Image (tube, rainbow, N blue to C red; front, side, top):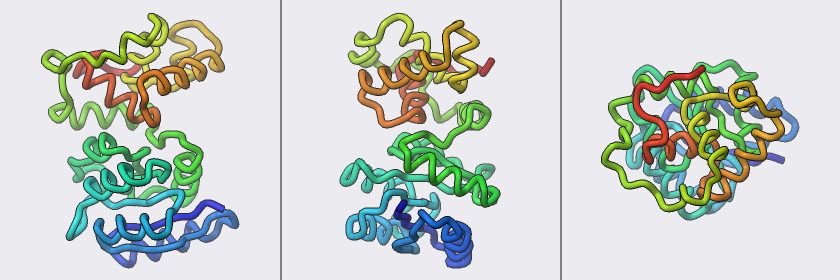
Length: 223
């Protein structure tokens, strides 16, 4: 079973998410919270596999709640639910440790697939959404010109640094495979090694890392 915690200050939205999620025989909604502080407490008490986290909430917002949960329970995965066009905090939530985000008006199939992906340790951030996120929130992203380069970069091979840059630009494994002319399975191996060497949680964190360390600069686009 995939055990889920819903954290949103709108009770109708929580009820709607619960209805969708509980159509799946392997999903179990173990709790609900109406603010970030409650979400942190319930995550500690219930140890869910995935937390569906709103960003804008009273008492404690979703960014701080995400940071607190990830720090105390690194195995708990966070899926941020947002109204993309008005939430200027998505980048901060991803940086805090969220495994990805979905729009609140996502189709039920997208929500279910997103939960499964996050539970499996994958990032819910499609290449097109990554590029949109980078473009929309470019002013919030470091440009790499003043940030110190992390020593962990020295652990990467030249090929791994190349793959890191392509992930940062928002390319999928398939697009990276075509760009550097290697099998997609090889790309997956590179991604796993990058995550291990840089001590990062998932692909979303790779994107953040690439910008913070000047591997990708503002204005870099996809293929």
